Image (cartoon, rainbow, N blue to C red; front, side, top):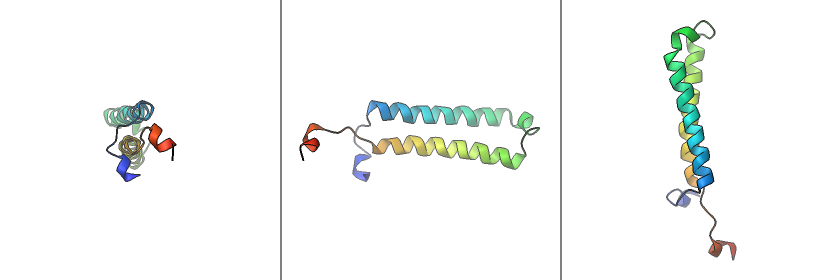
Length: 78
């Protein structure tokens, strides 16, 4: 599976990875910009956990999509 990392990522998985990363950026940026306002709803510790998890999931999600590759006709014959 690791050998697939540098092979071209199929369009479907690249789009999924980009969507995960985009959502992550939206959540973390919104959380950081509205940190003071959100403290009325959440504790600062909870906000840091939410922002940290969104950031980590976005990076990990985008990274993991690089392990998918297109099935070639030669491999299907085996």
